[in-house]
Length: 379
Image: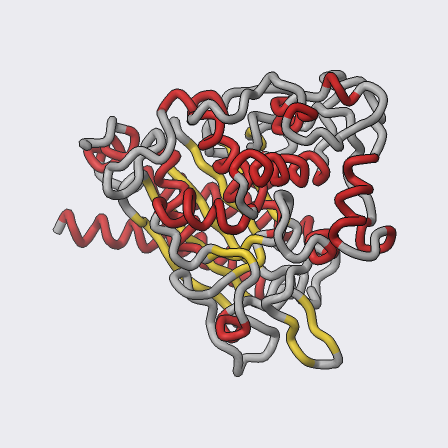
């Protein structure tokens, strides 16, 4: 009887998540979505909603196999962990100047910009440059970023900037001697068990990739939405990565385990996880965004103050709550011809509802299960 009551309670709570996401489809915020909610060692909900396109004849998104253009989630799923590994190995020091790794990063005051400044978005660089307009090719685009002048002294202001992540990606390449996509595939995604996660999905995978636009009635998929990433060849530190809901769940669980993979192998050291999720400046950790008054639109009202995560312009998000031992993945392709007014505002509301539903789903579990969610991994 107790089990039946528990299942009914869990079903009622997960139903609130269903209603929030299905409401987003019905209101035209996005054609489809994937939600994965889980703890350190279990999945509480993994479900697809709507369709890959606005046509009811297209496939229903699948948490295991549907690839989404992650946009700025690339920063914390590819670039940040790559830098973490190099820091652990002593190959990158956070407080060394960027010029030590990228000598062509030249200009007034740039000798004072450190790797830590890039990760905390305190470099003094502006938010973006229209590389797709101003540069003819990848080399010219890189040159523009390297020559971009500082707008503020390093460390003075927090200004979220794609340029910071581009530079971090190039640091990974300079130090490792490998292209960013190769390094992350071999050193991050492989050990993490993220077999679907990759840059530049081949045409053979496009049929299960969520479209990001429509051209003359034909869905556009497998081609990165971010035009600056496209100008950089589709591989960049700020955007270009594709992944599935379940691969991101595996990644989030590693953070909740203090850096351990599902096989209890250390990908990151616990102290490295702690360092990169600690407040660095304003609402920023190193790479990650911290939950505060602005991100609460994305994280609801119930996740703890220790929550960190990130969002992506295409409609993706990942939030991790170490105090509760909980993570929430919501992947959408909201940039594919949204039919709602103010779609990003609506999406933030849905993210908040899903996050609150995820916390209630965890709270509906028996006390022993909730305790296991935050217990030290038995490895």
